[in-house]
Structures are given as C-alpha cells and as structure tokens.
Length: 184
Image (tube, rainbow, N blue to C red; front, top):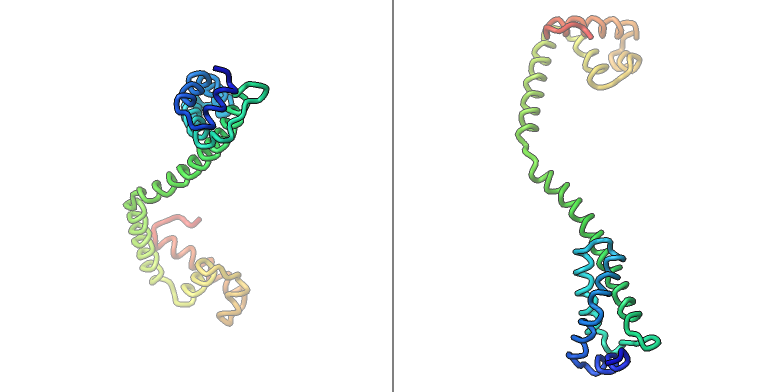
C-alpha cells in the first residue's frame, strides 16, 4: 500500500491503516524523537504521543510528494517541543519542591538548641552587666547593641563624646572580665 493510500484510509478513520502507519514508521519516528529530545526514554514517550496525535488529527494527514514521513516528522517535532518544555517545567518544579521539602523536612532541633543556647548566653551577659554601673550599661547598650555612634550616644545621654568613649572602653573591659573572657 502506498503512503497516499494510507493517508486516504487514515483520513477515513481506518484503524488498520493506522496500524500500518505505525508498523512502517515507528522506528523512524522514534529516532526523530530521540534526535529532538536527546533522551531515549523521552523519545519513547514522544513517539507514543506522536502516534496518538496522528490518530487524533488524522483528517489532516498529508503525503508530501507521495511520502507520509514529512508529515509524521512535523507532528513528532511539535510533540517533542511540548515534551521537552514539559520536562523542563517538571524539572524546575521538582527543584522547587525539593527546596520546599528540604525546609519541611528540616529538623528544627538544631534551631531550637541554638535558640536555647542563645537565650542562656544572653542571660549570662545580662547577669554580668548587672556588675556594671548604670551609666556604663547605658553606653554599652546604646553603642554595642543599638548601633549608635559615639556622638549619637552622647547626644542621647546628654554627655560629652569623650565621656561615651571612656565609658565604652571601661564597660567592655569590665564585661569581658565578668564573663571570664579576654577583651577582644
């Protein structure tokens, strides 16, 4: 049977003609799909999808110069584009889900332990700060914790910048001693 006869029978909805098209062109369509996807397994899926699409649009079947293969390759090309696009989207989604699953599967015990350690350490610092004068404690909090400059701290406390510098130096030294550390 010629390709033109296959096209005529295919357009008429002849299932045997579809089987004949598959038998005659499956390997060539499969190879065409591989060349478009670079994956044998993706090519297998694309080939199957191509023949499903061929059956679905059989009323548009065309034999170019008496050959059905160009039309089959055109259908395969479109199917492969969609297959590759879908695979890329799935890969991106899988990557996002992996990140989400990684977060969801994250063991919070390390974070909780870190928070407990932070709280204990901060409690020790506050306890040690009780050994500082109120003025030294205020300067340390404003400059070291709140990030104010010496000039800003001086303005906030109504003292000279030199006073802030000396209090800051004294409070760092004293706090380091109270915490049992060398001054950094």
